[in-house]
Length: 441
Ligand code: GDP
Ligand code: MG
Image 1 (spheres, helix red, strand yellow):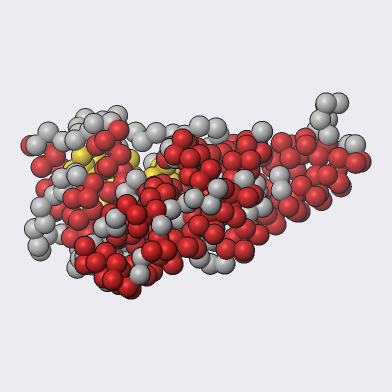
Image 2: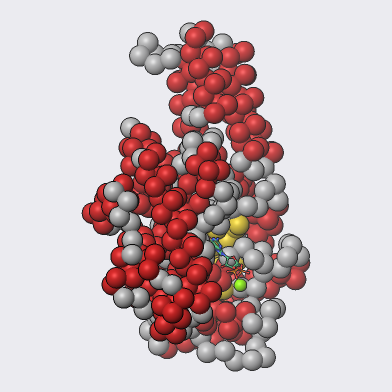
């Protein structure tokens, strides 16, 4: 445990026993940490009471300190409350086409998550997936899903104007049966807040399709409201699983605990970005750490291992240390960063990186320009990529024309490259690898 919490636990360690007063003091800090992480107040109270009971009078083994004992009790209880160790997979045990119903408030990420799940089932499990938008609320909603489906390479139900959500649901299931689909994902309309019209609509769709999964999609930034949202949807339609989106943001994930506490349904997946592959299994132990302020080391390491080509990274790191970082390396690096999400997002996941972030200022790579940067770099000659300093006005014009961009774009890229090499040198000095290793042991 880091920060405030570890201070309290260190204090306990010196006293040598788990008295009621010791536990009470530690629980005060746990309570603050949880509220800070946006866990809903009633859920915090309940959790703290349970843990207090468990902790007071707890036998402390000789081999560990009382502080470690309380920390372990808190951490274990939190993991339990989040659903225990291990991820719960989607339930597709039903006669195909298996309907998956996506519900939640507007903007929570239902449509995006529908696309992500479709992509995952289609590629990882080789399922034949049909995407259907039942969102007749917003004019462009059905188009949005259609475009996502195209990006995911998954078919979507043809749009027929004028149909009600229930009619679309029926047509989706018919198409699914007729064309031999394994899974039909039904993306519903949200509302800005819970209302009866929304609940009735979802209820009717549910009655029409009998979904194997009713996934409640919630934004991780949802604070104290999480409880109300979860309760309303659970009472109206019965939630079988929760998807937490925007885990890539600053949110510490307290909503996960609130969701779980109210619905009793497991959190099955988390979203960590706008891109279609930014979908992960939910790992209670990691979110527990995040709620208590531990930093998501394990998640970072897994993510890095997943996407980083280590040999290439090492080569680049070595070059940077030797001051030989060039635009080819930059292109390689932005490919990796594009895969990992934003660089500042990665720094956020590491405890103790606040200072580095400050040193970097708010500079970060906008992932949407990465593609353009790659195009620009591939319009350069080898010499230009090796020695960007030689790129003067006439070369800039040629490169811009060759890559379908403007001279300003080229300038911006060169500036970004400069910032990036500085940034990389600093991180390198601190030793990203060393940090990761420390975190794991
Ligand atoms: P819906 O109204 O529930 O269908 O929400 P959308 O799927 O349209 O998502 C609303 C916005 O949130 C879009 O701009 C998405 O790109 C964005 N979004 C969805 N999931 C995530 C996520 O996990 N992380 C981030 N950063 N953005 C997300
Ligand atoms: Mg939508």
